[in-house]
Image (cartoon, rainbow, N blue to C red; front, side, top):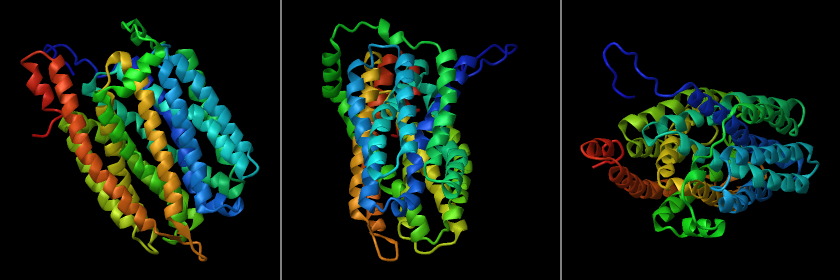
Length: 431
């Protein structure tokens, strides 16, 4: 916030339109995240009803991720050559159609195909949204913006998952997908009617053809570390989350009807943690908060994946702390990585980065389905092995994010004249 004269009111951090953009993108992300998140609690219902194995269920989760990754690479070719609003609307319409197909699925192979269609369109929405955020908001406040948008993660738990599980338990597993389609129409219509075009990147000089542009983005040595870091960042959620409900019911002894309480309470706390971690990242340093969130997550994952039958209140407490760490990692890592690309490369960079994330996540879910097995008593075996893999990836990412942070601070220092340079660099670098 800029300094003002004593008698002048302080200028707000965000304008009214910027608040609208944050809110509508968060609403949009809510529907997309819910579409992915709902697969996890539905696992305990889908596997017995469709008579599929954990490996097949893991493939259903991976199908979304692999198709999302492929479409992201294709979208990267033209991402910086179109109005970002038009791209967002196009892919969101396709996402809603894919989700409707999931709702109409009658067997495993129909569902698998529907997940592929949903992934083709849904996987690009996040990258376009992040490109819009990067275009409209400065890095100094981007942590808060990312934190607010990540509230969609919490909202999908507080509102979406409990309602979705209730519908699945009392009607059928198709009902949550119809819910997503119905709710998803709202932000789509608002964006079409109220959101302004996002075209500033079109005025930047770029004499390369689309294919040359994406080729240079992929091969840019300054971007490769970010892509590699994103690869490992995706490991945790895609390995543990798809089997979370089955593990809770069959291993921890949580009743199926108590799952909405588990996810709902965790989500309520996440409403606080999302904006708070983003704010702390802007004030204390994004890398500092990322490390703190990683340590907390590692601790909770080590405890959670080794639990036996556990009281619901204890499982809720562990989930609340684990999601606090996850949100801290998500908000701060997204803000730092978004600062890496040059303005004319943002669309391609974000699309490629999203593709890398989806491919890595799809592979992680696929491998997780083969690491764990289901015993005669329906308990999942080797879930603790997944915990070890996730912890190892988080430790590696802490080191990699250190170099991402150094790269961002050098870029920031190069663009800020003295004497403000040292002051701004302190916000991002740990000495």
